[in-house]
Amino acid sequence: MIMYKKGNGLAWLIVIIAIVIVLLLVLGGNNEAEPQEQMTFEGLRNIDTEGRTELEGEGAVLVDLLEQNDSGISGLALLQDNGDGTTRVAVVFNGETTSTPRPMHIHTGTCENIADVVYPLESSVDGESETTLDVSLETITAGLPLAINAHESAENPQNYIACGNILNSGELMENVEADGVMENTEIHMVTYTNSGFEPQEITIDRGETVRFINNSNHGMWVASAMHPTHKVYAGTSINEHCPSPDNSAFDQCESVEDASFWEFTFTKTGEWGYHNHVRANDFGKVMVE
Image (cartoon, rainbow, N blue to C red):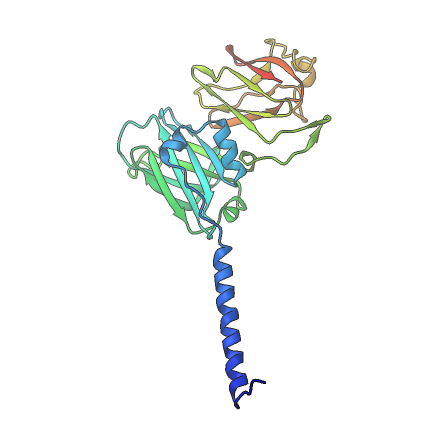
């Protein structure tokens, strides 16, 4: 039998409590999530559709920064939650020809209706910028609508050179049933420039979505072949299906200016030609498998 001296019970209790505290600290440390690998500027410049989908699946938000006021400058922004209540905002620009710092901010509103600054960003220098915001990505997106806007310079802040709307639709969509088709989570990007649609032809799976982004100096009205009736995809003509509240006719039904986009989810397999109704010589094709 082990004999305890008076006071040993309290000493043992203190030891046990200390051991429990140490174990909790060790286990808690092991449960910490590893920092997510950060994408380099070069990686962001060369990202493809698969890479965008992977990032968005990890909870990041990508924002297409479209040319404003014939600046010749467009780009891409990545908003990525650091997991510690902060958010990394990385921006790359294409078409940058000077080393002039470009002031940038996240504003309330949209590119079509820019309002107050809510989050200042580091100025872009040589086409690159990186900022750590002391706020979570969830908090940022809870404040939508928001837009990232880039200015010509500190001396000419009224001149906008690029802008992009921060959109929930840029994140992966939840799977939903639509006309008996389970919509895929992937969004394919087609950019409309002064030279036409890029890429001009894409292949997707049934139920996937294509986002047409207007980065030109012209209006964009994406519509099914043939011009001017737009009848091939839906089987109805423009006069019958426009406007299209349920967005089922593969017809944008209106022209939008630069810094805007339109999305369409393809529920029919086949090869679907399309064109810009207001510039009918610009055309493309979506092949749905």
